[in-house]
Amino acid sequence: MKTKSFLCTLISCLITLSTVTDATIRRVPTQYATIQSAISACSNGDSVFVAAGIYTENINLQGKQILLRATGKPGEVTIDGNHSASTVQFISGEGNLTILDGFKIINGENSYGGGIYCSGSSPTIRNCIITGNHGFYHGGVGLFSGSSAKILNCIIYENTAVQSAVGIDNSSPDVVNCTIVANSGSGVFCWNASNPIIANNILAYNGGYGVYRHDAANPTLRKNNVYADTAGLYYNVAAGADDFSSDPLFVSASQANFHLRASSPCISVGLNFYAPPYDAEGHIRPLGDWFDIGAIEEYDGGTVVSVQEENSYSPPRDFTVSPNYPNPFNPTTFIEYSLPRESNVSVKVFDAKGALVKTLLFERQVAGIHRTLWDATNASGSLVSSGTYFYTVEVDNSQQARKMIFLK
Image 1 (cartoon, rainbow, N blue to C red):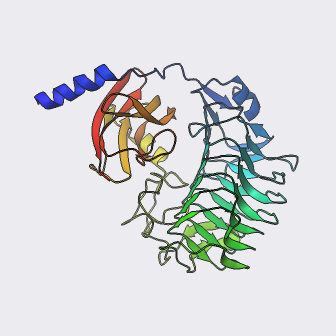
Image 2 (cartoon, rainbow, N blue to C red):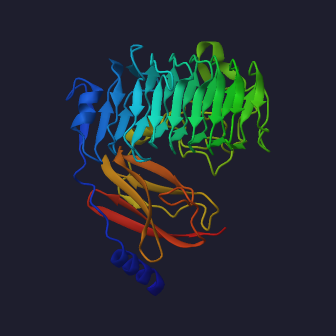
Image 3 (cartoon, rainbow, N blue to C red):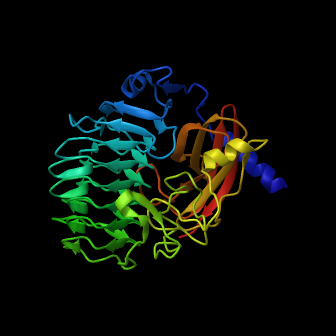
């Protein structure tokens, strides 16, 4: 007990946290007619919640550290670029705490990234459906000039381009648990000094190669299902040691239903240290025995609702922070916490001396049980040293801290 008391006193003395109580939620269309007008009104830490509907506009995140979230079910909140430019642009140095979450991105037009164009910026793009966009080089997503973006749980299909659906140039993003299918070019195209992590993805039925490597690119390929791409599975790069090639057995790819059948080879074979804590529909991963490959976790019968819907029925009574799992860990661990009401949330990691290592999350969240993942990297993306670390979860005016141990 004395040791525990000492640690609590130590961490409270060493860590001074910035408050998150000033963050504002801006709602579209009830408060703002357009998504862009809401973004323009934001300060760092704010959130923009967008209701179901089709919004014909081309948006720019303007370098702001904000959460831009679709509040409808998957596919219900659409941003239509109207073939005039990239539908979404990140071109002002946005970092991983700038988050695009849950939108359907269509009708974008830009040679270097029809749906999403990202240059010199490293946002988190998660749970999005990116389809029907066009670019001469990259139809779905283009990542350039040192981008370390995180592309998580995205369904990227039927985009047109000569080269690829996802283009990576002089950048080192994470492309994880995505379903990249039926695009006219290659699935992922890596060139110049790019070092992306491409893991837990399904890359199938694309018109070019599944993965195309050019020049000095050095992609890390882990546990991808690369299947039936017209030109071939890989160009100028070897398959990852645990990649495989099998029919993913979608429920109906022709009808854009990319759920997995119960017999799919993509079920329960993913890598946990890359997998996001939720899938594209808001289900906690894993739903079954282990993590699935692709954007959507398969479930065995019954009705599974999203974590937001589930939590809305019976929210937790208190704000609690659970021990991370696993602990000790190498190199990833999950941090879980419960919110009794919708709150502004900040999750941070500190070293044993109280120095900030990384801010994992800074956003508005609904009541319920939430999880986030730490992959033992610092704010620069470098692996930290083995040792003792602390994580804190701050909710409005309350905070809790716990200890964790990273062992290489």
